[in-house]
Length: 157
Length: 72
Image (tube, rainbow over all chains, first blue to last red; front, side, top):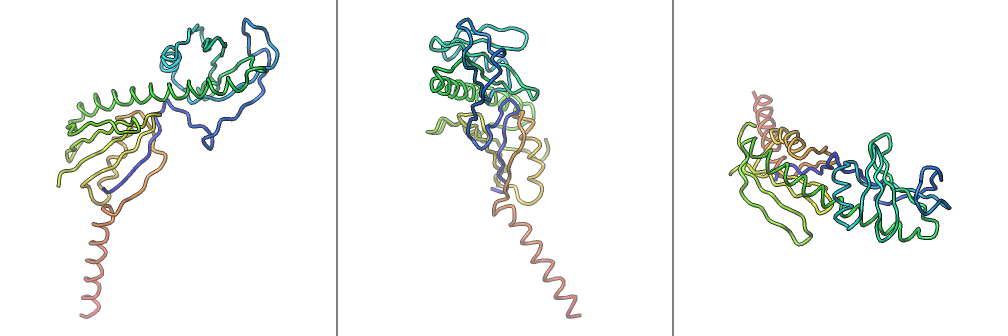
């Protein structure tokens, strides 16, 4: 080996310090059918709308889409997802009485979104590597569910 | 030794890539390629022992040349 690099897909937003920060949200920003008592919000890792929808559907949620926001119903709870100025989706909910469940649900969404990103990256790398003349020598799935691809490279790309 | 590129895509979407059999600064060219393949940006990198193999050889060669020059 000669160099090792760590990359973050553009579709993936990193959580600051790996921890999620819960914030109070403006009540008017959370318009659910259940009415508003205490609105909270938290940053997700999602930056890609299509993959966020797929992740929510994959978790069994119904999803209603409008111009900017996504309204999901998970385990009977309504959660809104809206992007900030950097394109990172924030989850918002009237979750005063179910804050812990909100955090749990959002962790599930992040995990499922990560799997969607993994699949997306895998498909792109396989397709683009072939276009660049890289020959896939080996593909394997490790015990931690990571996908390992080994390519034989040429002198020029 | 064949030049290889190993890409590990983690369950949560993060990517780790490493070059194999590529010594010296030429492996830096692969950094851009990896980002383009995966639509991703590099957030951390580290050179491994193999990278320094060629550099070390070059430094030793330069050192020997200088010694000869000093002797003449």
